[in-house]
Length: 394
Image (cartoon, rainbow, N blue to C red; front, top):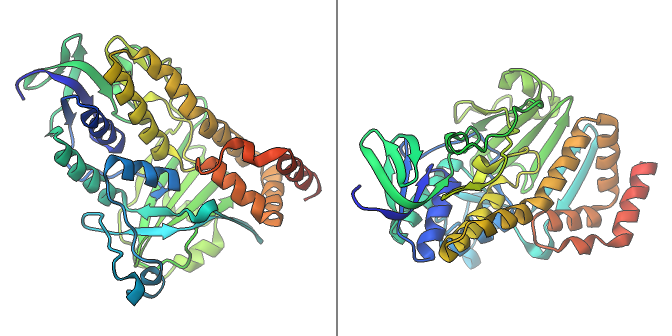
């Protein structure tokens, strides 16, 4: 690990790997350090919105799904024989929209322009990103713990790793964020998440969101015989089995399905930062601040941030990254805050789900805006008025 790098990335999750790849594509020499060893798992919903899929492809990460026919039937249709899975060791399963389920009310929204999202087991996605980083020429240093930062680089147990720039991509509880004095105030809101997998054939090509009392369950197809279930909730500690009882229909459906993974949790989800750069250090991904996983756009946001950071590094000035970071997070942040407000007000949430169920085309348009497929102006005055009317009359 001798010699200075243009960029030292601290953290080897998807945000760190994407940042390293982007910087290499911009012509920088890059070293990445991570105290764990791959593949690295994380508690998350594992559903990639269409925008995230396109950003991965722009990085050169192949995430072709199993074919639609193969996903439904378990066999490959002759006219789709060319479609192959390119996630190392696993699969990518396509989904065509989001389904909200609130009691007897079901609202379905399709991604516009025939776009698809992909359900990908986080372990498989991590392996694909590692492979792409290796191909791009990133120096990957696994099992290396960073002890602190200096102006000239990062201190590790093996000595100083010199670098011109440092990117902190070390997650929700970022040490880099704390070391550079950008830690925000402790979160007053306490939201947590837990995820497990079931060995069962997906019953839907939607990501299903079940709404319960103070909690939501996200069901994502991630393989031909594998479904991921992530539950988010507000309050204190809890267990997956107790939370699943809040969703009787989902609990019945999964009662006989074998477990395919251990439960993995995360939280508190809300993490604030007082800035995203200081000196020669920048924060990216969850380390740069995180609101909530309720809208499922965290990875897409991190991929956009990595591209913006690489552009700033290529220009030799981090000041523009802060403005880009705000711009990238504005729309998803506003949508997340809106959905969280609905989560805290069940009566209003029920009205909203009934409104979306009555206006599937409007729901699809909102999904397109949320997934950066459509510009925000496509909601239009008529769409906003119709949604407001539905909320009042639902």
